[in-house]
Length: 370
Image 1 (cartoon, rainbow, N blue to C red):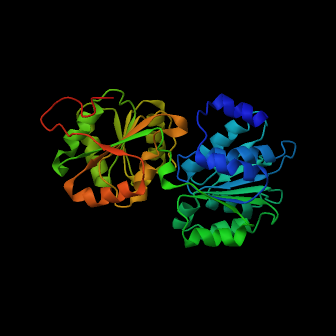
Image 2 (image 1 turned 30 degrees about the horizontal axis):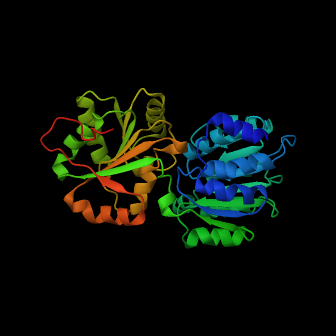
Image 3 (image 1 turned 180 degrees about the horizontal axis):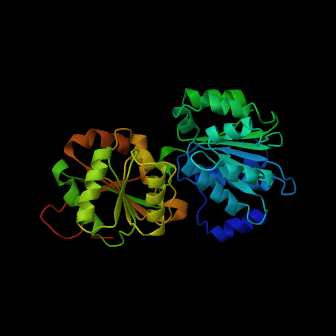
């Protein structure tokens, strides 16, 4: 099939659990609830069946994907564009913070799949530019995050605008009452696919940790960065202040580095991500604002400078590496005061998190066996 040809060209090496379980029921037209983190291949899980089921001859919006953020909308739209290369379906990302006129022109030119944030989709609906009467397939991507961001009313408004006989799928990292409430109201006998926590894209990933004094973390980080094959790295810090401080210290040591946190404007954020993606930077120091929805190929290492208090944040962070079957390494710096939080993380995964020595009095790389 044409979709398979596109997938082969993309070089997918491994089929992920969420894909193995979701693709067939979606191809059969069933509603699906999938519990899966970012980085588990869920975009292909819902994108491939959508592209297969839509009609390239119908120049109307037939597929609708709701995403929480601009970055995720762009990423998902790019993937759908690649999946539909030979089906010749027109994919359009729509989001706020940029010119609406271009998006209006693309809709008028016959976009068939719209991937967007709820606010901009409602804006286009209220302008009577976006018509959802021909929609066959709806996807709610990262539903829990959209609900946490206060989009519940927007989502319900949009779902009331699509035909009742459409297919609906919902993907979420967590399945709390808010998510299940949406599912119960707007889905028909959904197939439930729950990917266990130990399958969160960790099979290609080496997970390591080292116990260090809080004051020794920066020195330890520098030793890690001197290791072999440490090429493209995201370092996660808990606060904006720590992010800026660590970034400044590394810049003074000559690293090509950029901080990234919620205090950045959208244009500053876009520039930082673009520079990191292109290789102009090889080191990003980020708060958890970058932990979800950031899809950049070739990240070799994730360093948790601070242990997250929420264990699930750990999986969101390390999901930035080992994507689409690539290898990756996650290293966590654990201070003595963070041992309790780190033990909570270890109980959530059956994959081994291996301890490495801190080599306090050595100038050699801390991860010398890479």
